[in-house]
Length: 253
Image (cartoon, rainbow, N blue to C red):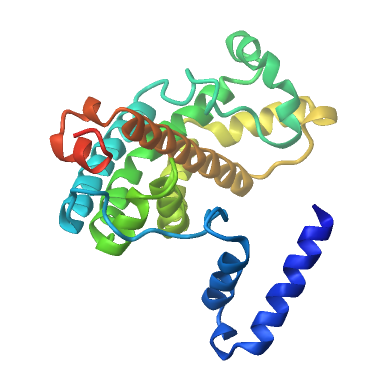
């Protein structure tokens, strides 16, 4: 395998050096395809043609419809009481060095040792998730036909990756003041300070600003985790959306 790799590298170098058209990355990729033949992997190639029997307009419209439904379900699920706290995959535990106590967190909360701190962190995230829906809807609206076609023909979480890339920072920025207000309202900062003061050997130092950023990051991560699950399910079972157009663009119509 190593000899073949070295030979491929040498062959590519020779072709690039002798061909003026091979000055771009795209041309170099074409040369690699010529060397490896039609069986070469094309994982980095983005297809912008709609699926067979589907127009570009249908693909774009169907995808936006599917993503709008997915966004609504994600926000409804995570934004309800217990949306974070009741799901081990997204439940927010104590931050920093305190995370070593997460295995005992439920018992500590019930015993009043942590002043219900874990519940307060999760409640803050649940309250902030509602801010994600307008941003998701706006990102869907701004999506171009080219973007949509690349997502339709892309991997299982192409849309989720697109959202994370285009609106991830905006989502955290929008949720931050909501999280901070919620944490303050339920006296989470005071609860953390009290617990840290009583348990300084294990708690370490963790300031209020860090607590806000910590919960905001966890809330954002939860949104994208759920969105990825929704996207995979739509691709697996587009008929389950109840839309013939969505089923058609994902090859089940």
